[in-house]
Image (tube, rainbow, N blue to C red; front, side, top):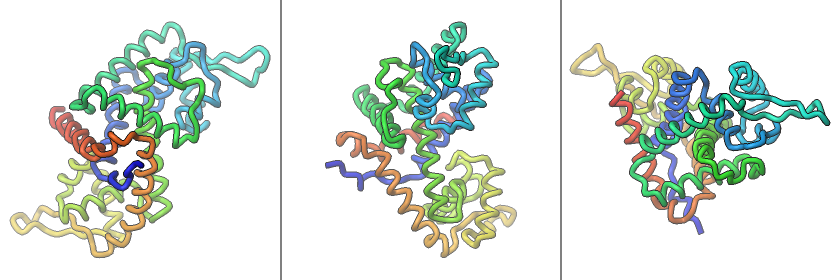
Length: 299
């Protein structure tokens, strides 16, 4: 029986997932002029030889119709994607990579795979890396409620990158939903308040660095939390121009229901993972976060 109680929600885990979305998004924008969601679609389409219908594509990448349709139009206009209406049913279209764009997309998928695995998921033996990848894929299937036949075990290397990109975004989206249902806070406000409760007090700059967050955003959400009476500012005795942030006594009461809701999500998310992996996941998330910090320090 899986010991899901051994999986704990950590700020390192959430920060790592959010940072991967941001860093990969910046990479695709710089190299190809594409967004994170745009390249998720291209990576998914690169797994299918003969194209895929719109519904399976929605289901697989877990993006809404209102998000996918404009993205596919942009990708079609940019020469990456072809949408072909079927002669026997004009309402049905198959999407696939344009032949001239396929080598570029596959090369970028390969490079992004190497970037992800060598920079952030290093220190994992090959066997454990494969277990982690399989666990992410199974978690995605669990959250979408099924395995999408057109994308089931294609054997393509693109699938690893696609699974991770879908998984990062899917987990964060479900975090946002559960926080909204349990409290008046948003994800960023929760992360700031939770980190302050864990550390007792932090300067805004240290808080921004720990959470991989822009200093301006820390200031924005700090002010919202202050208005709610959940944090307070304290002047530093050695330099009155400097402040540190502290949680108020009310913070614990607000965080309780959120922590419970997110704890349930974390256990659900990791439920497909194998026994041998459960025991080391918490250690791995700490390592991944450390790799992230080294990457950011080297930029």
